[in-house]
Image (cartoon, rainbow, N blue to C red; front, top):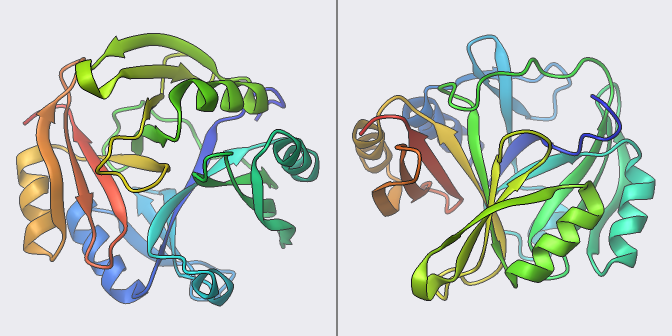
Length: 255
């Protein structure tokens, strides 16, 4: 991982019921769960031989401040402490000061100036092998429902070196801004619509076919909140909520 690359490198669901969430995502996305060797009740969700995401019970300190089940993403930085301080000075908030996970890396929990939360991470050891963006079981897209699109784009660009690509006009919903972390766009940003109560990140998991996946969501106690919907490029998406209340999305190259 080069020092200049600030990409999303890991994803995690924090939930009120780890066993139920594990069963849900295993059936819906097709991940294989594996207990993390470091213990602590942490589960790795794998696509084939590759770890894609983690699953854990919401920590007590997060519950104490009202955290609900949610998906979070980790952004690579070369120096967590310096990046955390830079974010603070730019108007972001630090929800957990930098700390170490032995043999894994150093991280902090932060939020952008409008309150969308994510994590900063300086990992140790080997980086994950890269895969094609539409590989089934992997994360294919990341989306920010921003407090304000222009301010968010300025903030993330200044923090991580991200660059703006094409902007699509969505009529009354405003612009949908494609964003690159170095290469083809892999992030979309928009000012949050009224039905999204607060700024947040949303992550899209790749599945083979969207209608079958939507059926698996509802059959296993989740909700389809929006879609199926075809998006530019020909993919199909749905936006969902798991049985514990964490929002996520699914993407497929066929209906």
